[in-house]
Length: 180
Image (cartoon, one colour):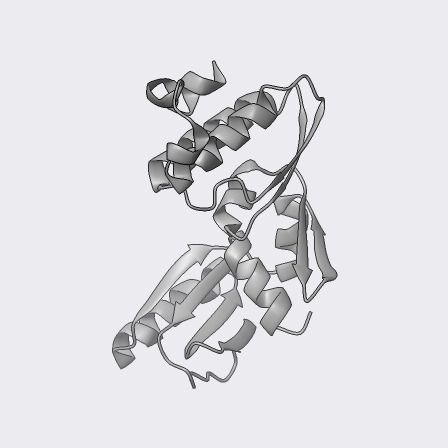
C-alpha cells in the first residue's frame, strides 16, 4: 500500500544503489512508515523530492495521522503548515515558537500580511507592524480594513505588493526579523 502510494512499484525489485536520490528517499520513508511503530521520527523526508512526490508523501502522512504519531523536521514551512498539528520553530538552536497554526498566528497578532517590493517603505499612522526584511522587501502585518487602505496607497504610488493571510512563512519572518 505504501509502495503504491509513493509510486515505487516499478522499482520494487531494483537494488538501492541503482536508484536515484529521490527514489532512495522514497524507499527509506516507505520502510519507516511500513513499520508497526506508533511513533515515527522523520528528518526532512521530502528533501530531494519533486513537487508531485512531495504532495503524494503529504497525503500519506495525513492518512497516517489518526493511527501514528509522526515527528517531522523540515525546512519547508508550507509542509509544516499543511501537515502539523503542533509546530516548533527553532532559530539558532533555540525554540522561538511552538503551538498549532492558530497559536502561532496569535504570536503575529495580525491576520494579514502585505509584502511590499520596496526596502525602505514607510507610512505614518500605520495600524499594524512594519518589518524590513533582509532581501529588500518590507513586510506589513495588519488588519483587513488597513489592507484596503494600504492597497490604494500602494497602487497610487506604483509599488508592487502581494497580500495574503498570515502563513507559517510570514509568522517565521515576524518572529525572526520582527524581534518577538
